[in-house]
Length: 112
Image (cartoon, rainbow, N blue to C red; front, top):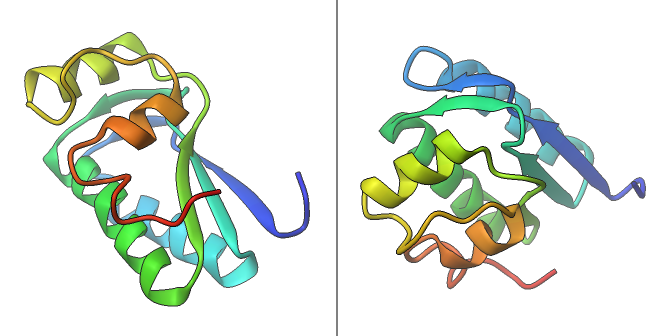
C-alpha cells in the first residue's frame, strides 16, 4: 500500500467490549495517512457499537477531508448480522460492496 493509505484489520469481536480499542486504532491511522481502509475479514462478531464505530469513522474522515472505506472479504456471520439488523438489504461478502450498501454510509463519504 502507498504511504497515504493504511489498512486497519479488525480481528475478532467488534463489539461494545472492544470498540474503544478499535476506535483508538482507527484514530491513530487517521493521524498517519489520508486514507484508512478497514478490513472486517478477520472479524468474528459485530454489534451495534461496532456498526456505530464504522459510521463514526466515516463521519470523522469526512470532517477531516480524509477517506475511509471498508475493504476485503466480509465474513458470513458479519454479513448476516448486518442484513438481519436492517443495515443492508442482503448479505454482502465484499468490503467495497458493503461500503456502498450500508444505509446512509456511502452517501456521506468521498469517492476513492
